[in-house]
Amino acid sequence: MQITSKFTVAVHILACIDIFDGQMRVTSDILSGSTGVNAVIIRNVLGQLRNAGIVETRQGSGGAHLARPLNEITLYDIYRAVDCIDDEGLFHFHENPNADCPVGRNIHKVMDGRLREAQMALENELKSTTLAEVVADTRKIIDEE
Amino acid sequence: MQITSKFTVAVHILACIDIFDGQMRVTSDILSGSTGVNAVIIRNVLGQLRNAGIVETRQGSGGAHLARPLNEITLYDIYRAVDCIDDEGLFHFHENPNADCPVGRNIHKVMDGRLREAQMALENELKSTTLAEVVADTRKIIDEE
DNA sequence: AAAGTTGTAATAATTTATATTTCAACTTTC
DNA sequence: GAAAGTTGAAATATAAATTATTACAACTTT
Image (cartoon, rainbow over all chains, first blue to last red):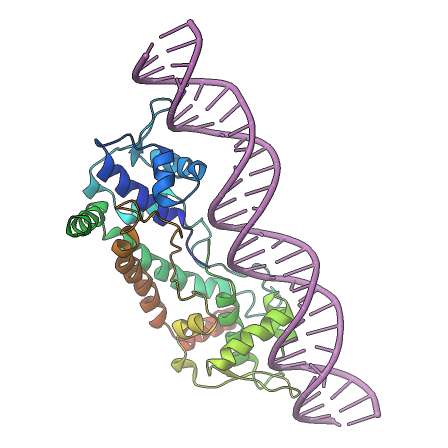
């Protein structure tokens, strides 16, 4: 199991939006071409990013723009926006433990806090990186090519 | 997307093995009953735990036993044993970024280290808990019931 | 020998992720 | 104001991953 590629796709298209904005109209078709991901999926992701206040898009006119500065968008914001992880959490608990077994009826409770801690450690790490850093690194590599 | 339930199942059955060992023969059928997970899946998980040197099982005789002390088995050991995450890592990268696009051909490289850090933060957290703690908490709750 | 168990392979069913098709609503440009 | 291109969204299809099931040989103990 892995965290859905919508997350890395979202980071990818946000980098494109920042880097190409001004040079061209960054449409879902352009982004589909850069990512290799279907344009409808791109529009879905853009929709989630829009709902989270990260990008701006409008029907008809075409072309996405960032809604706030690069350094105010963390990887965590993106991860949340595209709904990588649902309310159940990162770890999938088996669903039918036996309530007649003393272990079965308590294991969930015992594990819950610890699994949440682990998930939080991951998420805190994602909070520590902003798109500004990602884009800066990308531009640097491009310049050196 | 979530981390496969084989992980929580594995923790569950290890707790059962420790708590019930001596009282009964802890077979895959018993464990299937406690977890609500198919007995063949349980045997697969036990097989992975055996390969990792965490439990001992034998054909014919039946009944699993821990292969080393509870405090020498971390949640990370279990997570590794059941192969929660493959070599690609926790985050799933979209597979066909466009090499003709400057962002497309570099984004993977730029993100890689950061995603690995996040995964490591998760894993370090799992390393910090041993089965001894999980079982102690479980026994405590059982005693208070 | 009988009964019960593990280990493993093969297959099926279920769930989740991703892609595709379609089209109405909208904007800009001619 | 018509044409061309775009977004947003729904419906459906395909693909991939997870979990369950069936089947049985190999093994142990009684």
